[in-house]
Length: 332
Image (cartoon, rainbow, N blue to C red; front, top):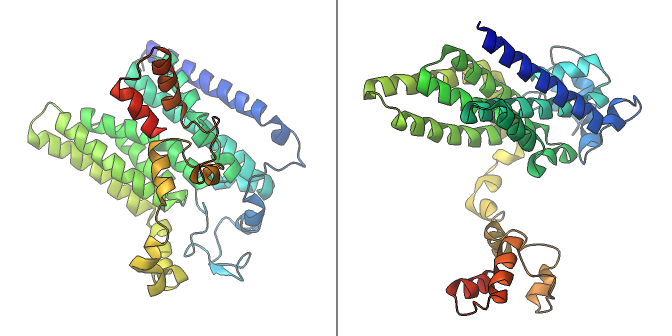
């Protein structure tokens, strides 16, 4: 290994350690008090399952800690065999949940830093991106909701994207292994829905990289086949986490019955008109919807700042004749 590579690896390791210490400082009230839990909205409901999981390294086939008993893996028992489950054997299972969240945020920082470092060529920019990614409000707030499965998927998503990029462009065997392990990490986190959606996006990205590759179609097909092979191996390794829940939800669970799988039931969960509008205009749907519907909206209900600020500037400059001016009024 070249001296420069060793230096870069040492710098990256130092940054990773510094960020981990920063996380310990942020969560110091939990980390340094053995009598404290990192409470989130759902943690108390799931402590029974965590205690059951920590009783044996190999899971029993029946979990009697909830719902009068459910088949363990069949009913999608959380992150039962995820690598981070080992934390539950090293400390109190109830407190282990908090430490797992800290480690997941740390992994997200490292993976995002590696991707940004590869894209920008600068470790400094990579570190900044990793910091912003790990502490983005959407992602970091999952800690409060207790959504460790979602966080596990998003944590290694940048690394999986980097692996696809390296496989298609360079045919890297190392990143073939990285991509395989990244997908296994996601699936064993048990949030199969989000993993499924990510794989769709990853597939389209792989096709984009393949088409953009300056090579013959034979070479392109080979590179794409390598990526597909890595995915197939990952699915094979984690099949024990995929097949039992599928069989349970389709044959045993109430979710698999006819009344839960018809069009009427699906459409009952469709978005309302206000929710559709909020996808285009952030903040359109909120606590003041009732007043908006009844014509009592005050100046404080002026809509998204992305719309309000340009509107105010055009009004100040006397651009009321501009079509953009009236467009912002309609959107507002």
